[in-house]
Image (tube, rainbow, N blue to C red; front, top):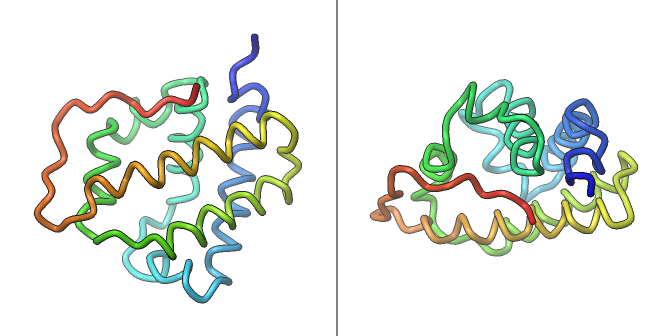
Length: 140
């Protein structure tokens, strides 16, 4: 059975996906907010590395950037923002369609992104402490 990474087309296609998603979020009045200030200039590449690993591909994110605890820490403490999350999830789904990741691969990638986004709410409270050594949030 192929991995979601393979079904999505590998790293280059996942990078195209994250680049398209960034284009879409920057055009959206609500979704753009977190991406307009102090965002890493290569966030799309870092997100592609993360998704590649989470989708069963090479350990690009953990080898070059950090572990799951690091990911959660950089997203923590910003409160729970369901409306923003839903906008970002909808735009991720649109990006999947725009770049041709459809059918089962698109549905699985969408489900992963939704779950990962919703799981980040665990650390939304400014006083939340992200534990060290969280396992990578892999898709199933």
